[in-house]
Amino acid sequence: MTKADQNKWDTLHAGRREEDKPSVFLQLVFEQFGSILPPGKALDIACGRGRNSLFLAQRGFDVIAIDISPVALAEGRRRAAEKSLSISWHQADLEQIELPGRPTTSWSISITCKDR
Image (cartoon, helix red, strand yellow):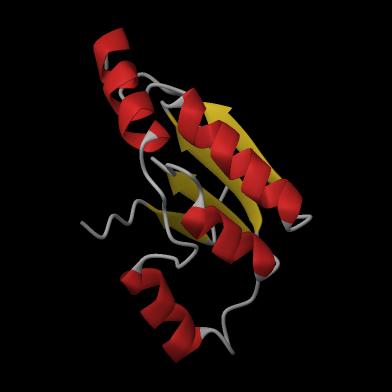
């Protein structure tokens, strides 16, 4: 991605009011399997303002959230702080990123859910 891509996403997130609801897919997973799904590590790729990250952190997951937009990440951090949730936020170009963790890291959940 280029600086133009980052600017596009910054503009989009600056003018958007995102719901607190996680993606429909993630809601369905937890409705059906939440009682047997133990908390673990979760990677939220292209997290935007963090609605899925917040949802998972509230359920005890250790969440790493990655997005290109510092505007979106700032809003995610603010919302996490309001809820006293610990999420590791990272700004990165997803076309060039080396994912956090060692090559042997296993993720309990890795999501890129977009309901649009």
